[in-house]
Length: 126
Image (tube, rainbow, N blue to C red; front, side):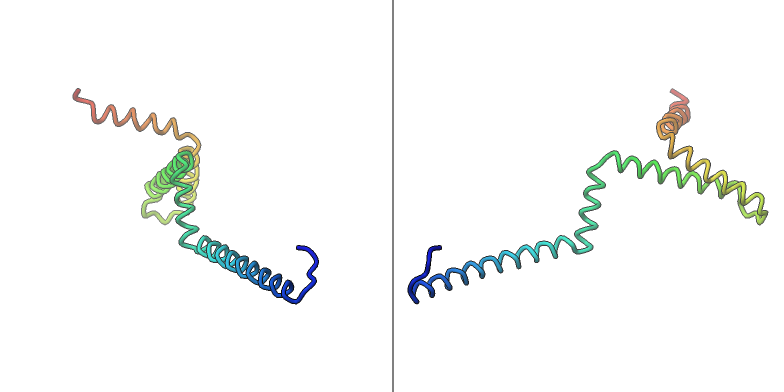
């Protein structure tokens, strides 16, 4: 923009700046609305679940950890039973911790053991 020498040029420059300001305000509002929509908890959860589902390594780790926790829990319940003995409970909790860690740290060995057992149980007559 050059030097403004007349009142008409000044009015034109003001209108041009006001129009530019209105366009920028509209863009800012659109960006704000988009950011607001993306930060909604439901959108964040859906986005996180999509990321988890698209990463097979992470899904595999979650399944291995969950199977370790479940197996450890059931082994602890099998050892303790309905006993009120504190020593037996302590031993049950230690076994739960050990089995959970063993399964979580050695998923390939557990998978091959499961395949071996299922092969011998279900294919016994063949």
